Length: 490
Image 1 (cartoon, one colour):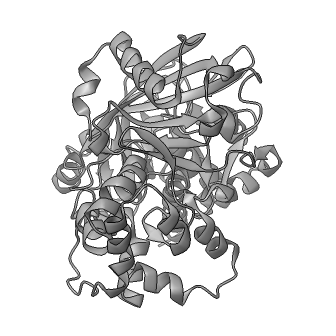
Image 2 (cartoon, helix red, strand yellow):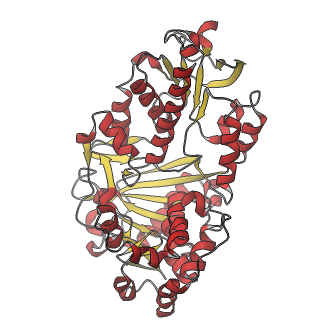
Image 3 (spheres, one colour):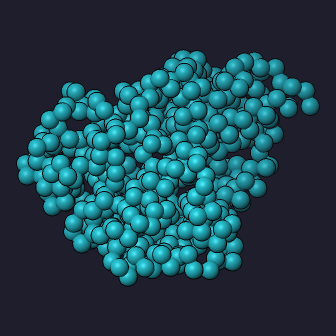
């Protein structure tokens, strides 16, 4: 086939969804093929999706994610490609640890316990988080035979099988389950934590995997050995907040390429080389109003799975059904500014996770002001208290005032707050977190097979191969690469 003229209708690209995945797709599409015209459709008035930053007086308050990891390097690479690396900051050195609640008391997560891998057995033996029977059972992981069944299993099954019930309930469930706001008994190990599945397969277990890599002096391996729940030296945050980072990335795109306040209602395949995009009208100056301007040669859908499925109702029943089957969880964040002198300095840390066995309404407390400099004034502490998720979905029926009272009650009991905060806000994120249930990779394989019939269609987002910002960036860049390869070959 003949390569398309860059100005032809068949070479234009529609990107549906202006969250981090869609924005990344637009950035890399423009970077890889600057001659290609594209339109990024966003139904709201802002770019960013569930990433949003508030500026309240001298406080920078994140409504969604407040940083990104670099173990998966894509978000950092996006910053570099956009010329924004100098605007990033690293976590504070003080209070760089995480804590966990055990029987109502707050304890440090043992150094050398990273996500679910024990790497410093001496620190774990000294920790009060586990009983002696729990510690001995964790050490016995060395002798637990590797599972030979290649089928998927849940996080709970994997962790209890390898580390024991107590380590699962007191450490693994609150640390890993909290990342995905998911139920451990339904969360897919192969989709959520494939590195540990591979470690068991390759080395026979988690401790064996640690010992095999003990001589590795790479920064990532050293970080894992010292980690207390999370590898904080592998995180970055934009100095002025996550929204500023997204806005600066968007500023690298042609201004006319972003169409805000325009909801895409349907997509229709005209023929094998063209798609028609129907919108709700949006901006009356939108270039998609004329019929020929509603036709595109390729489409990237960067929406959550459920609204994305609606777009495929007349295109592919298989895609529609598979996307509809991806479950989502609602969540809420109660952000508050509290007096620093009310919090015991010995409890200051980057975050506290709360196991389900504690029967509290709070899933985790993030000390945002302690993680990164310049988040609020020196006499205040900025807390973000996480609630709901798949673990406690019933809480999402509560009013904002009730959620605040529940969050404040837990903060009183766990960190000693006495007076009500000077500022607070309840942030709700309905259907924001996809649930990678056991068998998720099988679903992705079926989706990929169906997409083979649509080479000028790509999917991006956190519903597929990772919920973190780096994974979303990767999904967007890979979608752009797929479309650029198609346009270059047609």
